[in-house]
Image: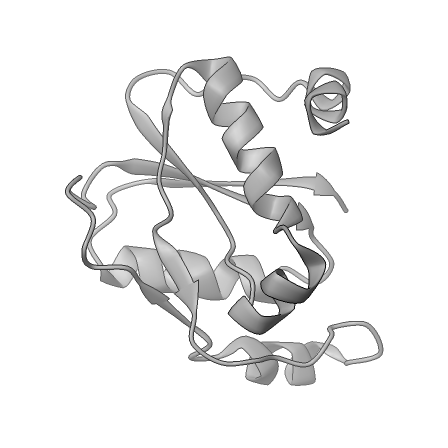
Length: 131
């Protein structure tokens, strides 16, 4: 099903060498659900584009669902909720395509972008399946 969605969506492949990663999910929630939909989308894109997929981010705490929150509450909700995984063998200075399933206010993606930038990522492209 994810492959079919990616084919319909069909975002253009960025030129050059990139790493594809996804917005991470709170681990207990991931275990309950059995998957992270953003990760499935990102892995499918990476395979289609023949790029490497790496898990670069980890969610450090549970966050509230974003629906029903105003912009200020959304920003506060995700502030400090992510960190870069530092045990990867691949240097984090490459260009990164960050994928999430849904973009509402952009608070989650912007927080992840901030964390990746602080870790030294030179260029970040933000992609979401739905808005």
